[in-house]
Image 1 (cartoon, rainbow, N blue to C red):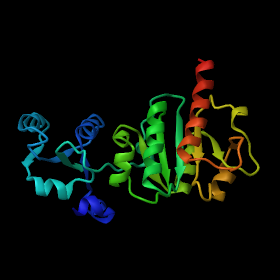
Image 2: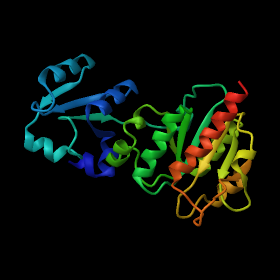
Image 3: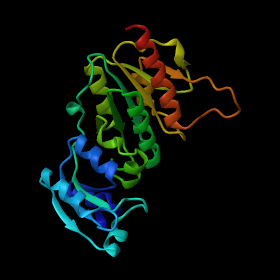
Length: 250
């Protein structure tokens, strides 16, 4: 129960819980170490559980009562796993290409927004995501659920904004900070070189440090009455424009 509810316990034990067959499969694909598998046989068969033993996992059958107390959602398919956390250091990032495209999200307020950003990153198949000044730990159950398991298969680093900027500058990234003030329309910029697209919170945007570090501040021209949109939607627009340009230049 503590692993499900308490970030402090997840950090203390360096473990977290995942639920569901898809999430379990993606965690294994992402190179995570599964320490223990708990299964409720009415929903997850014993043969399915035994098939997981080839990964060297401890398999434990649990009752319906125990399962319902541990499960974070109703459609968990009868399987819960205790999984070893990863470190997510900046220098551990492994870019897929020599001309990387990454997303930086500074202090996203809601776990659901983090999950949506990770789904966007997965849909675009970008090289990595950096969470700067995180408000919640990466293995919060709501992040895992809202990311639909892409938290396990995406290259992710967690750092302060200062550390992230130093890293990006060290590796000669162009930094495009999504900011309304003193910005240029996003579609007028060149994203064909190593690029970091940086988004902030919906409430307050990016902090000053990202404005100062930016190669260029960019914005999405708004056509309606309000002057903001969901952060994952904004990130998707910016990322897919970068991908469009890169495909034209292939």
